[in-house]
Amino acid sequence: MAFAPCAQASECRLALLLAMDVSSSVDVAEDQLQRGGIVAALTAPEVQAAFFASDHPVALGIYEWSGRYNQEILLDWTMIDRPSALLFAAETVANSKRSHNDFPTAMGYALGYGAEMLNRAPPCLYKTIDIAGDGQNNEGFRPAAAYREFAFRDVTVNGLVVNAADFEAETGLIAFYQREVLHGPGAFLEIAQGFEDYERAMRRKLERELTPHVIGQSERSEDAG
Image (cartoon, one colour):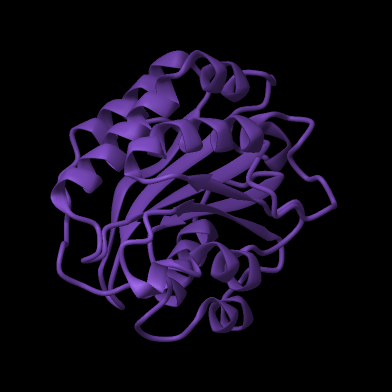
């Protein structure tokens, strides 16, 4: 099932790219919770309403990331212009299989991969990468280097922190995201209190990102609500 990209930027209000952490700190049960959380969030009534709150559709892409060279697309760019397209996106994630499970957390590389994926997105008015994770960068270059070296001039990067705090690298995770990950106009952070809370946090974050009057706001927000 394929969905054609829009022809003009005015026809697409947002290119939204979700980046899911599958590094070695995420175990099998946690990965199932985050995959299921994305599916449930995408199909939640309030998120569906936000997707279709405007006549101008949203282009959606989803990928998973871990080590330097370990990124895999789960959902390539799909125009969410009708309910069947959103259902297709949710079913694609539901049927996806984890690509890697034994690599570290290379967030700079993950962001660079996202920037390259945005380069071939349909033309949209705004571009957002939504990067979720349960640990700080521990391999390769840091987010700041990605922001310098890749095309992030017109891109907002929001964060979803999984606040599990099982490892030393996780205890300062919220501060790390606020200091190094959030980027661009209107950037904000959402916090999940463990993977069991992933669905709620993802649902809340998507609703905020997709609501038309929020997209393009000029003030950066680091609150998690």
